[in-house]
View 1 (cartoon, one colour):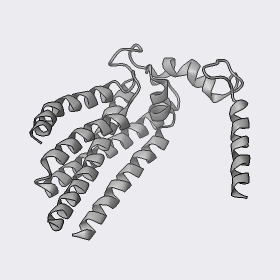
View 2 (view 1 turned 90 degrees about the horizontal axis):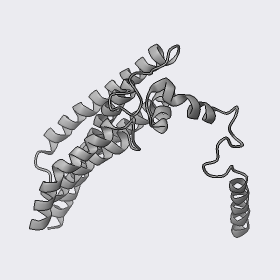
View 3 (view 1 turned 90 degrees about the vertical axis):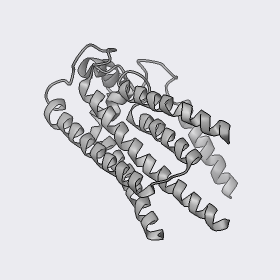
Length: 87
Length: 139
């Protein structure tokens, strides 16, 4: 039964990957009206940064990454608490 | 062991330099503040693994101050960018592919690298101190 579920899941994932646009193709099926083509066309002229990934992560979605930094901070503080707890 | 000590002492400033390079060029090349902080912390982790940890409490307090400063700076910078700049004008500054272009991203990368480096250094120092305690207990 479990093997059957796994095979079905694999088939579903293969089907999804097959329906994706080809690697590096632009404009692709997702482009045109989607947000990805907006980033590709306007990110450099709006921010002046050549690294579009860094632009999206730190400027367009900055609060998300701020929360990510807070997650790291929370992990460090909890490890500090554990260390003090043990001594 | 002597080879390890000499080599790690030689490589320590170069790993720091590479981390600073990745942090400063975060808006131009692949990388950014998280990988840069991990690289800088790996230098301290190498040093702590080879030479062990001597003043654990002082190092932890020192790094904790830096981590909180970095997190607060990242928060202030991102909030400024979000509230003041991004909503109604473009953040453009400088010509692309120059080092001093995209100044908000430049500073956010540096602050984030400080925060991540301090945080991972704290984890490394604590784990190395735990390891040394266990080693001495087993002996």
